[in-house]
Length: 100
View 1 (cartoon, one colour):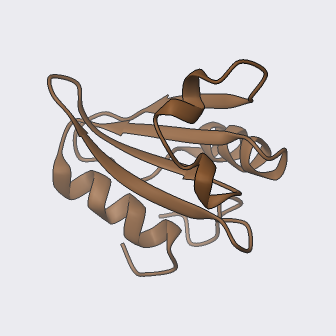
View 2: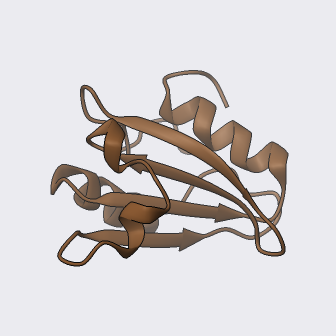
View 3: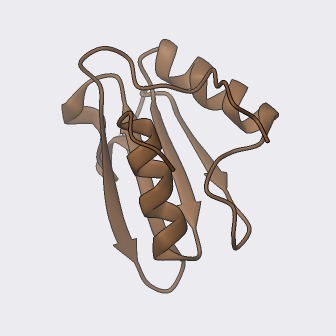
């Protein structure tokens, strides 16, 4: 089990959880709270990335972590899609500094 991570919210960053039938649940994270929205993912000229997760996974694998960390460091928006609400909630809690 991985105990350290490169993927953290930058100081002042935020994440939000969205319910998106039929695709599931999406955690959106960004360096600026105003960018932690679904709309920011489509904004022209704004960096964004989408990571998908299989059922039962609550955190990206090493490559996804690296992509997500770089996206946030560059001031972009990161979206992580989960098929299960419990998995999305665990990811959001971990990003906010809680235990997953």
